[in-house]
Image (cartoon, rainbow, N blue to C red; front, side):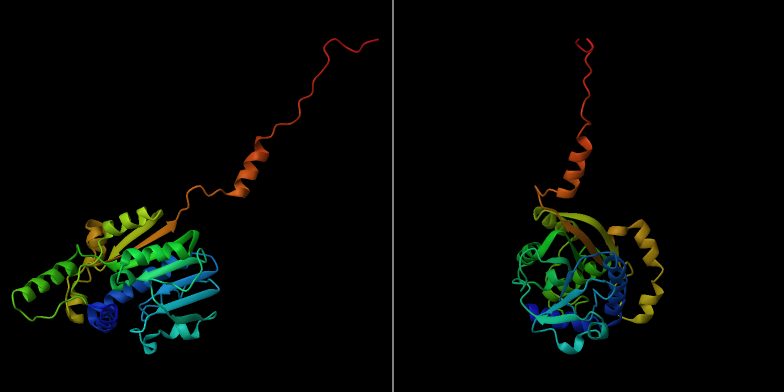
Length: 267
């Protein structure tokens, strides 16, 4: 499946009851996370129906979309926000930004639609400034939704034609696997969280019936949510904080010693 077809399928899936449930959870978590991240330049990679930067206050914000992401899917806040989040078409593997120029990059399922997720992460690391943040959202293969997806693929291999629950036939990137990728690129994970613990139901009625599983799942089986997000900070080895170094140097300087002549003054 190509990036364009997956993104088109994902956008259509977000209009279904489970898709709207996931989108609501992700929007709430992003509003909480990015509101306290400061800087000057922020970028969202893909998934225009999700306004990942609407609560962020950075003056320069962009929404990067590819050719498969139609302009009609842009959320209203993107068009009405001040300062406006500028929509641009680009390849996620070759971002049109200089190295170390962005303070925040949000990837809502962008790694799952990327042709080479490793290369996309390296490109994100390139454009982030030291101590810049990356926020990543993805499907958790170790969940009730992931189990239903694997069962659907198995039925297809046996000759069945039942539709898949999630919008892709390939494997998703696991939470711990993604943490290892980030660590190899010198990212330090600050926080992570899972959500959407209810079973993979297709109707609004059954999703509401299992709503009680959300607080229970977050407490008793937190790593089995259907989706997750990770916040990581870019660390640069050997970087020195000049201001802190000067303060320590000044504090370490001792007052000049006063030497007294114990023999007294000469006559």
